[in-house]
Image (cartoon, rainbow, N blue to C red):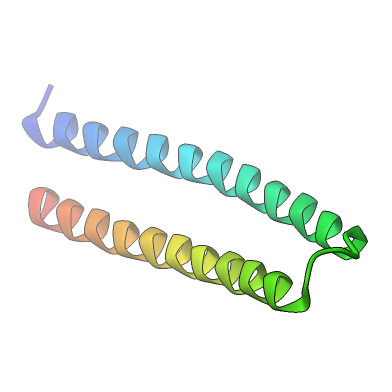
Length: 85
């Protein structure tokens, strides 16, 4: 087997594993955020400042998650370009 094909297979496999794992973790985080939001809507004892802080926290981790995914996709493209040109 050609060295390029082996390298390409390894890169594609690693990217696929990352994408699938990221998708699973994202789904779990989204479901957790939805449950927390539903809980906050029913929790009359939770102050509005607390609800706002939790909402901001959820937005921050979603943005960070999206930024991480974007960065890893860009790096995989660079790795593929470097090794497979």
